[in-house]
Length: 373
Image (cartoon, rainbow, N blue to C red; front, side, top):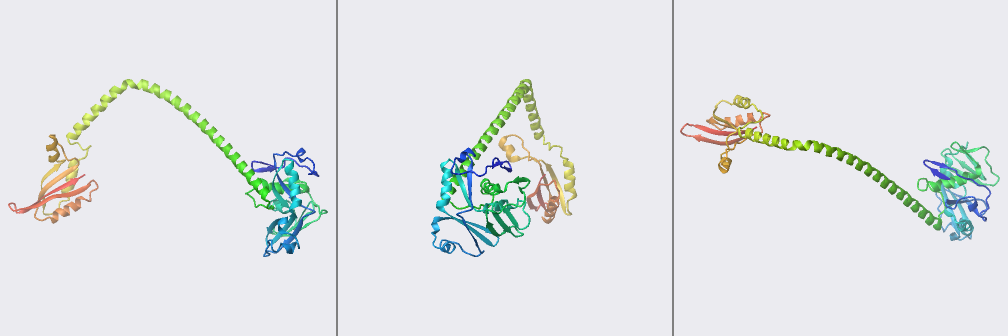
């Protein structure tokens, strides 16, 4: 059997092969083998759901037998456990025959139990599934109720997996190969054999390494392809840019001169106190409309001179976006009220009381308020 994408195809079948002869005449030794034994030499037992099985009670199944002399396979289905056992010498003989001919035996199975993962794909009717000497009784949920082996048992109708017709003799090989191919993706039904487990792990590891190498090579190929495409695009773009630079280089000096002229004009506007078209008269009208009773203006200065910086730099500097208002109020309470009203305007960033003092000569208080906009 070969896995092709999401499908599993039966590539080749052969019947009545004598294993003692050269099996490689029929099959390629590069393919892994899942060995399934049934018939003479295999003992089957049915255990209850709560029956314990170990080396101690093994003698109850085979009185006088040595536990370590047997391979044992347990299969759980519903509330029943089925046991199949064979002498190691007998099973090892078959394994050795295949290994000596160059095959890799990755799994060992006893009886029909590996058919469980594909049982739902089969076209059996009622509660009995009969094929190639095996009769399996199941309940409505698909759990095994009983199992019986007799070489005389034969399928009563054509067996199919999905839409594909299968000879009853290859149902069990198909099921065994199915779980070997989908190892790790379906529940495994197999005999624990240390040597085969090591071979299987090694094979799976080698396959993963090969898959990783293929993925790495594909990634490298796509990266090289992407790099080629990117570099080709960059080269053509660079050629176009080179042409554009050659055409526009003669205008660079004129552009630089224009930028210098714009900077000089912006500095001149800044020195003249231009605030990008803000209507300062409107701002002053709004401030005046908020004056409470008992408060009068004496002086309003928009963008006042920054005396400290002007003296230090010997150049006239202004406090941009500032309005300084000075005036008179007998008490500081109206001043605070006016400042609170000013803060309600969206264009006002901050309001600060720079000074409030009482002038005894004028018999009133003097204030200075600084507003940022």
